[in-house]
Length: 364
Image (cartoon, rainbow, N blue to C red; front, side, top):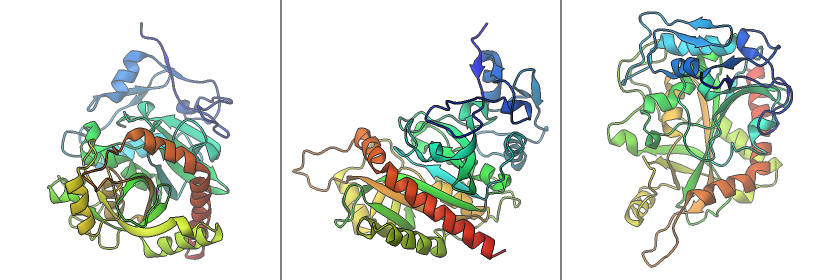
């Protein structure tokens, strides 16, 4: 028999690897003993198109309808709705703000998710239909909790196109957030700086993007469109909300970090290889200030389903533009800079979340 796998979830402040009291959130309640799923059941849960998925012990059926297909081209509304219902039945928090933590900003110590109080966390492998991240620096948990006194939903790790996942699957958690009730998406990423005025460790508020994957005909909205998510041809020219960007600048002033905060254009590339010198020079000529391998497809998906979006990049390395240089970008420096800037980023996000929530309440 396969060894049992412990599932969900800490109830109370998460500290690193969910120490503290673990509670059996998967039986539909918010307390009780830790639930276990054996290896065979876990395999069923992760099957891309199972007839039934069993969760918890004793077995609880997760039985999508006959229309709930998830093939290589798209994920249906019904599947996303079933994932949202799975989560909502196991938490009492109803967040309006969703946060995606980027590379180096969601590790095992000191990350934003660990700052949440009254939290409940779900390892991705325990959530039906969820992919699993394979990249160092992406822990792989979905955490519900309070950041200050604001209820939030936090992705501790994301999915990338270069891992072999199609873009619609990389962005699927954003649609789950939408059906959970989230209205505002905050996404962070690690990026290489192209702008000569940027230094390693700076923060770039994204005001616009160049979607190179989209230019190549790869978009998270490809395939059948369901109007319940959004329109067939969504406008993306105002993808990064002006009012939230203004709030972020105000936060930077309050924290006295204006000298390290910029606003610029981000470009997404497929990865996982870093860019050539010629590619970097081309991007710089196009007006790109920072380049990375994520975020754009998440923001496109969020805008498609009517969410307010904000994103920022942590500049973790300077892109190499000199053929005589012996420097080579590497993932280790990305992780190290993320850890170095964690205290600043946590305060930056916490203050911004508070302002967004205040504005949201005022506009009701």
